[in-house]
Image (cartoon, rainbow, N blue to C red):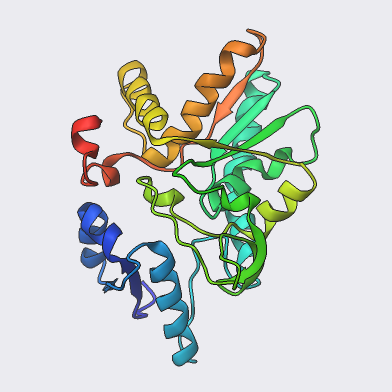
Length: 259
């Protein structure tokens, strides 16, 4: 609408696994640039996008991940905070008192927005869910600088990044936004890990019970909520954040059959 040229950098793994998203980007007129390096995930795409930004001073970097240079983390939290504001209104209209709020956390943009209204309410338990793919969660990793921000980063002893390869594309991040690193330090949010098998089972439950195909990213959060529910009072209210549909995951290896 503004007549501006745009370029999107997409890792080879996501490009091959998400043909639907790739087609939409192309139809919108975006210059889709596939990053095909040794590491073919989202971390490589972010690095290439930021390198392009540094080499082209007249360009503007548009971040979707919370792990980004200032002021993007604050901007993204503010914009995505509309999700949390809407949730608060819906809960008030229904007269519900929220007990647990659960959301998947890759870099954490969606979760930051969903949690925003509840962070000062000690009666609401906030839970961020990451993938359990053999690595420790990046929220529990060491402090470092990644994508232009100081945060919690999966890295080796020399400070080189260790990339994740979760089957849930949205959880394949090796750094969280600085807000999540801070919330973890002061125990404002509890962070859990869920394996791929449990996430797939949770996706099947939601599809069977509600007819909704959710992403594997969301499946991790649903799986945690399903495991948590039996231990709670029947009157407790749990809300699970669903950031995306499962359409984009259907072309990932083994996903179509397992969904």
